[in-house]
Image (cartoon, one colour):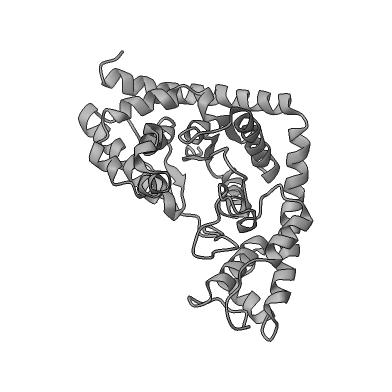
Length: 331
């Protein structure tokens, strides 16, 4: 008798342009999880609207993210792929958890502080402030055992764990307390123009990231212009953050080690590294780009697929939400 698979939940916002860091740090790893786990891969569009969005652009980006998920190798026969906003349980459970969460806990969330500093906390939406509770609802709604997270989301996942334990203590055993799934390979890809900052899909600087849908010549140009460090040795070290980043990207793209690459480029310069890295990235992303663009040419099929995924997700979410409502006295 086979044991029941553990459940994994993860999602990406449909804002900005999905980039090489999303592919290496998330999508490639998600694809590798499909046979071993029961996976729920979500397009978290409710999170996207915590900051102003152009509705027309958002609709297109939702489809774009779905197309990239599928083009990367996520199989809707093996994994549930859906839009967060098409499963009303996410918003409903978020409200129930809001009544368990503490104001002080949310006030300590560093990501809100960072984002609010840019536009001013006074003008930040309540949704942006409450984002971690919605994230907790996303995960607990499916009683996920594991959540693939990068360092920037560790604090939010810890809040999810806190809310699950608190709810269970107050109302009786209801939610699985999820564990972080730390994916080391390619987990942290830094910006091409600033190796001290993570590659961001919402960056206004086009040259800071390689978008998954970038044309090959655009990729080559961006990598050619990537920041480098002083000196000429192709080695990874704390005093060479830019070259370390390029080597990390190269290693994650080609499934080689940084040490192997350092040996290969011994006595060679940064120019050789960038030229070869660009070709490796072009080769890795080309089939994903071509498949995604083909899928985007059939928007109705994409929408139907997402709706079928949402139907499956609603079925899975119904039990946890119903249990939480009953335990709080609402049913």
